Amino acid sequence: MSLPAPISIDYVSADLADLLAEPRVLAVLGFADAPASDDPRYLRVGLVPAASPAPYEVWRAQGVVETGRDGDVRWAADADYCYGAIELAESDYADIADATRAAYSALAAFVAGSRWPHLVRIWNYLADINVGDGDAERYKHFCTGRAAGMGALSGTAFPAASAIGRSDGARVLQVYWLAAREPGRPIENPRQTSAWRYPRQFGPTAPTFARAMRAPGMAPQLYISGTASVVGHASQHDGDVDAQLAETFANLDSLLASATLPHFGAGSVLKVYVRHASDVAAVTANLDRRLPPDARRLVLIGDICRLELLVEIDGLHAAVI
Ligand code: 3EB
Image (cartoon, rainbow, N blue to C red):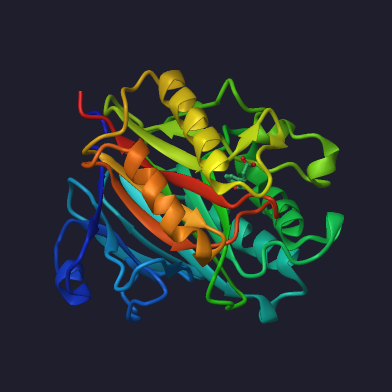
């Protein structure tokens, strides 16, 4: 079989109906200010953009796209890549751990039984992520439910991931992912303890994600997990958003080096999650200094999964080489 043909990701200001009419569109993500649509390729993510109207995040495949629904899973795929999404209302489950376990069981069953059995990347959005003290924090329950639900998939390499607090308040767990016909290559960061080895102080179940994933095939693409001001396993620069961004970029530089890819540029599409709207101006100015002008960035209001973290960055880096 031929090598996988990479997908592209762009931020696009356009009409939703026009985007969904494109035959190679694999997924369209709107944010909290976007309209609703029943198209299985569309998900409205519960994050409020720092500036409205936000563009859509558009994933385009190189092959012909088919779509479907399978239980709670909505999906779209070409021969090489499959996008999938699940949204579960927490009120239908005992608690956030149970809802997460249900979402991940459905995800794992779908992915394992599909023509795209290799998870590349997962995004998770849940309300009130920092509510609850110590081991009762909702993020920690989410981690427990995720590990329980991943089941059959947990024997393989963990995908890249982000887990962010919804800023629209809706207690609906949103999980969406990219899976592939061929496996990607997980990348860890020498500046950071691998998340699945985090010590007990961060909760009873360690987070199960890789720091990044090189795309399957030969494309110089890196799917970057949520990256924040964490060195080793410890958060750094409590209360200082500029210092946290400096540390975050040190982590990102180290990650790109581990993946043997050059700097951010025209093929970089980054999401920047900011806890406090009052930090947006400082964050935007800081990003303008650190990123080349052709690197795309979208600033969203969202809670980071450790209370002391003020900012986190994830995205796709398609290196121009
Ligand atoms: C960290 O480095 C910050 O639980 O899926 C980043 C990316 C973080 C993904 C997840 C959590 C997750 O630990 C938090």
